[in-house]
Image 1 (tube, rainbow, N blue to C red):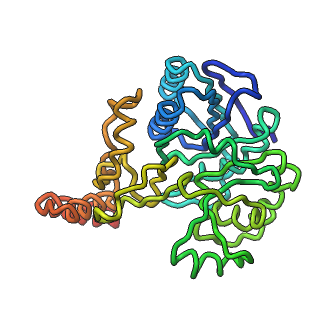
Image 2 (image 1 turned 180 degrees about the vertical axis):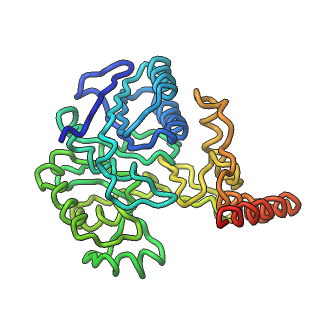
Length: 324
């Protein structure tokens, strides 16, 4: 089966050995946060030759136009790979995790003739500093460079559940991939074998990658994937973030482009959005009763009680209507 149905090239293509390649796997409705992420990368790496790659099952004409405009304005190369829409249809997804999360499985096959190494990033990330030192990290003897995810849940549950022998678990939102080694060790077939087991995983593809890539990882500094959950009530001692963060990752259910996200750490996203081509797009409004509940909870956390009551009532009404 031909994985890529259509390839679109926007902007300036550099010679392969002169550019640093960054790849994303998204749905069409994630173009806005992706655009802000790409803006933050460009702003913090003005002297770097960077080439972007986007893997998606669909990109609308409207989004194609703005991506093309971004490439032209920044004199940068952006390659879009439109993949078969049914390729992951039988794999599990959730309200918060779409089939686009599996796009990262396709990266080596799609880019193997373009580059030996590529940086994969989730779209809910913001770049805060130069990536120059990342390019120098040696992953020649491994398959990926990743950041360990260390918390009580992972230590007590995930490592035990997945039977990871080396007691380490990584977040797959940032992966510096050695494509040659990925192909050499037949990682895609190993992923396929795990998928065939039909076992249910808490974190879907991330769990599968941890199983298949165990002991084939170079663990890199946390600054390359600094996870922060913006759901919770801010504490000034908690959100005083280090100055040397390279990639700030908005993990969890709340995202800074959603109206119910009110945490001050969303200001990093807002900073780059304000100078991006996506600056005039309004925040996502609550559409489902669950999102309305999030809105009510956020207003409650930030002591806006009247608004909290309004959204809790709206949540209750819409939930009842959905059950009728």
